Amino acid sequence: MKWTCLFLAAFVSLSAAASPSTSAPQTAPAHDRQFWRDIAKNKYALPQGQSAFPLAQELGSSLDSPDPELRDDLAYSTLDVWILYRNYFSSPELISLLESWQSNLRSGIGETSTDAVLKRSFSALCLAILAERDLKSPFLGEARFRNLLENALSYLKDERDLRGFDAVKGWIHATAHTAELLAFLAANPLLKVEDQSRILNAVSERLSSAQQIFTYGEQDRLANTVATIVARKDFDAASFHPWLVNLDQADRKVWNEKPANDFLLKTYQNNSYMLQALAARLYAQPKTAVVSSALDEVAQILRKR
Image 1 (cartoon, rainbow, N blue to C red):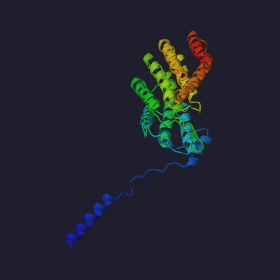
Image 2: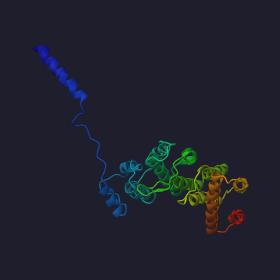
Image 3: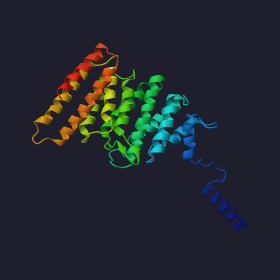
Image 4: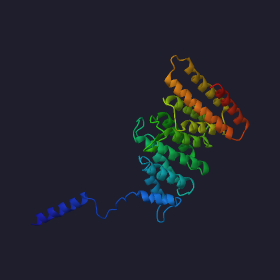
């Protein structure tokens, strides 16, 4: 009888250890859609009794949602207001979000026509929020800035899903979102002079490697990145001029192909639309001698197209 009792006691003890404790804290369920709608309706005020950072992490988990309201109207829009205008987050919390969203840029990279692109694309857009925030109140520092720049350039080059908009899933827009990120990085004082040519080359490479004509304003977003570089106090005109010349010369090859090369024609159109948008953006900037000179160079190319 004694040994039987000992055996039963041991069995009960092991079973309790193997089973989850009923007193252990349970993971709180995600907030429902109405919770986020109410926040948006209340001008994105933080609900009483709630902490911003765990809510931001929860919102981040919705960046891959195929539901455009949840992903774009609620998750992205709330994060945009909270990060840029409400000062809800400490620097360590912003860095934590930075690291999470950067890792998302490689999630399923190389896939096309799958929902995996949504996490990558909207993570790039949220990283653009952080890059803009750093312009207002720096928190990145040299090392993190450089890492973010490298990741942005790599993502612009490696993304293969270039859809702009889907009637059911809404905006996808990976190229435009990455251009937005690069534009804010291009405005940062931490950007080195030699980085300017790297960004310019990344822009022209994206336009030439797309194998399609962008139809949802991607060329304009990329032009904004270029215009941001031109507006810098340390603008490197010595690299901008040959970049423009090389782009134009490469495009002219399209007219030497008989029959016409569809790939070169698409690149020509992408570059033409980008240059037109660049001219408009430079025209809208204060007319410094540097900006006027860059605008003249772009206009001369456009007159021959």
